[in-house]
Every structure is written in structure tokens, then in C-alpha cells.
Length: 316
Image (cartoon, rainbow, N blue to C red; front, side):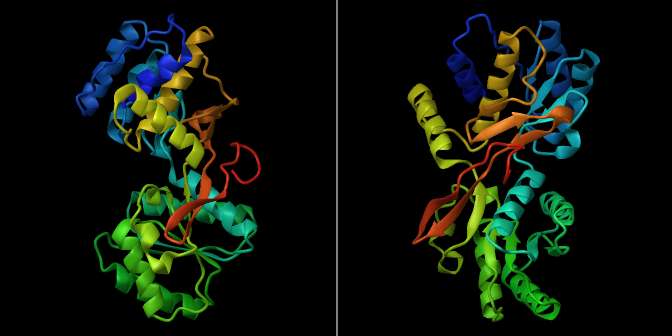
């Protein structure tokens, strides 16, 4: 994360912008202390911290000093009052997947996933988005984390058969769990099989692309060309490939540097920016608009189906 932030500042090529790293010690108390120290040393924008708890703790000192904070968390509950959530959020994923399904003619959508924070937020966002579009309420089944994924697939297939089926089905989980859930749907004889979608958690999973039952499935993820460019630049500078979350740190640091270069604490609200994973746009109220691509499994490969739209435009 630190290297990604440093890369963003290096690419801004402005020696007047100074980066002041502070260690949160991976704790809420450490995050609050780090925020106070950075502000005391003259920081005009805070980049980070990583987790929900650290963000909540650091927000107090930042808000008291009217210093904006670009947090790496994906918890939308932290957004607002000078805090921007830079991680990929369930609402961003739900909106992009719903848009892709609707543009493909799928009107009735289902969600099968874990009864965890991500699954609950994804379901809530999907309900809201489909209601706004005047479409049927989604068929949502959230199961106990760690439960039998294949059996969950069979149970959901029975429910769909009883309720008239769906045109598109979103799987909130990734990896083996997603593969087993789809195998359960197939074993239950679900007909017709809906168009399958996954979340950004499928990105980078080469094994899931090889699963025959997922051939043709799509998922929301980073723009491949943009992400590859970022990863190549990162490797050229640091000799290794970046972690998946490094793009979030890059984006936050680049936006903070732009604000500093233009005179202080005023972030570029409303301006589209090409981030490490695709286009982003800071919006009022701590909301981040994020353009996600739709990728698809074809012949064991991941291919681009729909380009990442500019946030705030059609399909975003």
C-alpha cells in the first residue's frame, strides 16, 4: 500500500507535494494517534487508513481539523462528513451488475451468497437499485458462512422453481464456494439456467475461469488495460507485482496529491480521474463513483465483455 501511494506521488512529478507516512499499528487507537500526528505536522489530506475500525477512529481528529480523509475501507457506513470511502463497495458492485443484466435483457434477478456484511449490503443495494428501475424485487438467499455450498445451490434452485425463476443470478462469493454453488444449481436441474454473475472477488482467480459450469459467466471487476498498466509500472519501480488493494492506495494518494498541488484541502469533487483499476469520480458526501468493467469467462480465459463506464454516466 505504501509503495502504491509513493508511485502515485512520483507520477505527479511535483516536488512541492510531500508524503508523511504514519503507522497506525493496525489498531483504532494507533489510527487516531497517527491522524493527530500527521495533522500536527501539517498534513492537508489524510490517505488511509485501511479498516473500518481504524477509519472510524481516525475520522474524529480529521473532522475536528477539517482535514479530508480518503480511507481504504469499503464500508459505506464510514462515508460522509469529510471521509471518502475508496474501496470497492457492495453498492458499486450491485449497480454495475444490475446494469449489465438489464442491458442484456434480464429483468428478474437473484442473489445467492453468504449471510455476512458484504452479502447483506449487496442484497440491500440490489433491492434499492431494482426498485428505482421499476423492476421486480430480487430473489435473495443468504446462507450461513461455511455451510455446504452445493446444498445451498440445490436449495436455491428449488426456491427459484417455486417462485418462477430468475433471468440473472449473482453469486456474492468466490472461489470454491462459487463453483460448488453452481454445481448444486446444475445438479438440481434448474431450467432454464439464468445468466450467472460474480462480484469483483472473482478478479484474479484463474481457477474459477476453468470451471466448465461457469462458462459464459460474467463479473464486475477492474478495467484490464488500466490495471495491467498500473501493475507494470509498479513492478518496474518496486520489482514485484502489487497486491489487489494497492490500487486503492494509488488512487487515494493521487487524488490527495492533486488537491495539495492545487492549494490545499479542496479535493477534486466531481472530476473524473483514471485510477489504477479504472475511472473514478469523487462525489459529494463521501461517495466515490467507480467505473467497473464486465468481464466474462470464455474458453477458460477471462475476456472483456463491457468496458468500465465513466462514473456518473450510463451503465455506471
